[in-house]
Image (cartoon, rainbow, N blue to C red):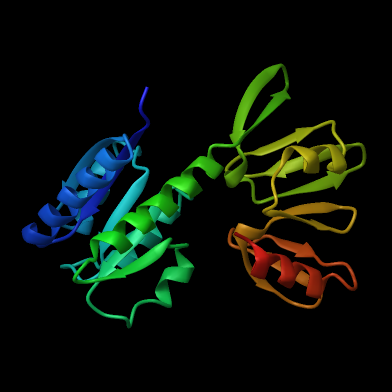
Amino acid sequence: MCQTYRIAICDDLATDRNYLSSLCEIWGSHNSYHIQISEFTSAENFLFHYAEKKDFDILLLDIEMGAMDGVTMARKLRQDNQTVQIIFITGYADYISDGYEVDALHYLMKPIQEEKFFTVLDRAVTKLIKNEKVLNIISQGEMIRLPICQINYAEVNSNYITIHSQQTITLKMTLSELEKKLDSHFFRAGRSALVNLKKISRVTKKEIYLQDGSIIPLPRGAYEKVNRAIINMD
C-alpha cells in the first residue's frame, strides 16, 4: 500500500499554484506516493478550511499575498500544529529570518527549480516519518498515544514524572525510563528534567526558555552541552 501525503498549496497566483501542483504530482509518481493536493488562493482561504480539517502534511506557502502574508499565517498555524512541514515560496530573500520563528523546513526562491524542489520534499517526508514516533502511555486506566514531537519537556516530582505537551500527564516512571523511550531531540537537564530541543526558544547560563513560556533551570556546567546539542540536532 503506497503512502499518502496531503499537500496544501497557498499562493495567490494561479500559474504558480498550477506549476507547484504539477511538480508535486511528478514527485509523487517518482516515489510511488499517493498525493492529495489542495489549492488555496489566500491565507484567509486556507485558515477557513484548516479550522474544519487539520489534516495536511506539507504546506507550500507563498509569502507575498494579499491582506495576510504567509509568515503571519504560519504563526497562526503553529499555535496548534507543530508537525506540518512548512516550505516557504518567495521571490525575495528578505523574509528568511522569519522562518526560524515558525520552524519552516526551507525557503524556495522563485522561479522554482525542479530538482531542488524534489530534494526539499524528500526532506519533508523524512521529518514526517520521524514525527510519527509515538509514546504509548497508560494513565488512569486509559491508553494515551502521545506523539513524541509534541512533548515540550518532562520533569520529576518525587516518584512520578509529569510530561508537558498539549496536555499534562503524570505517571509513575523514572526519568531514565522515559529517556529510553524518546529520541535524540531530548536533552537531559540534570537529574530533574528532559527538554525537547526543538521547543527551545532561548538559553542562558542558568535557564532554558521554551516556546510555550516554560522556564527550565539549567544545572551548572550544562550551558555548553545544551548549545552543542542544539547545533548538532538533525
